Amino acid sequence: MSIQRVMHVLLVLVVLAVPASLALAESLPYGVLQCGHLGEGRENQGPAAAAICQNRGKTPKEKELWAEALRHDMYVVGAYRYVASLLPQGSAQWKALNAAQARYYDERDACGQDLACILRVEKRRHEQLHAQRDRLEQPLPVEAIARLTRGWKTTAGEGLTRRVLEGFGIQPLRRVTLAHGDSVVWGFVPHAANVQSMALLGPKGEVKAIVTADGVYLNQGEPGKVAIYLPRPQGLTQILPTVRSWVAASYRGFDVDCSKDRAACEHPRVPVSLQAYDLRCTAKTAKQCALPVPTDTAPGPAVDLFTQ
Image (cartoon, rainbow, N blue to C red; front, side):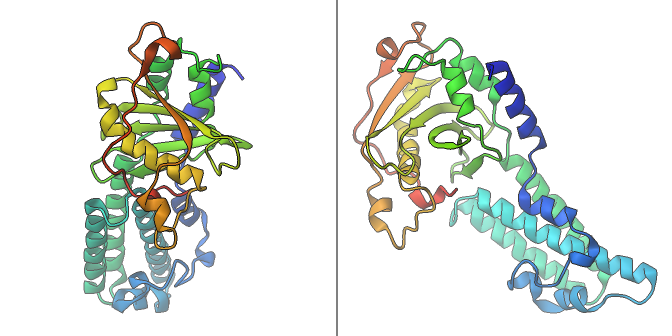
């Protein structure tokens, strides 16, 4: 596949990608929607929830209002859970999201049995969550990545741009927003999960680091290889802890439960070959553009933030 084709496919997928939780709710017909469909939390408690579940209406207009209230109830829950999945659990952003959701339930319950009022509150919250999702879910900056890696070769002699973009081949990409606003985005080659690419993006979507990982995911033999490519090499010390935590998560297949595997979270370093390179280097070769990798750095984000 040509690099132009890879970039085109990725751009189309990024533009068209819709969170599964939202797409599911918006595609279901009225008759499929059921109270309690999305859980037994506060979304299904209180007077507003009772009105949505029990008041199916008598006239055609009332029935339509009830169906819309039930549909938007599911929209809000799906959108809330998706946004929550983008935030590190326990972070200030995550706590603020939960506080805002609690206020929403208070507003919804203040409507009592008034379905028109409930629907207005639901629509407003749905719009807020969509806006928050859009801020968090910035598209992968494919063109910026291609521009930064153009002309580079990997240590195996492969074009770096092709290698990086193919490693983002599985859509939708996984994304984690860190407490300070940076995002970690990663994927892998279809049918070759041990060939991965990762990008560390700043709060405005700027590329802070591009990472390739080979033989790291669920490592079963030879030490994996990790290469970090930096537009600004002076940031390596700050970036390295995040990369190491992500590598540790990948090594263990992601979805680490720190309550059951404390060693994985407290000692995230794993036996991999880790190299770093300066993307500003005009030689564009691994040998001439390598950077010294610090051995001692601050602790990175929790390994169990990275789920797949």
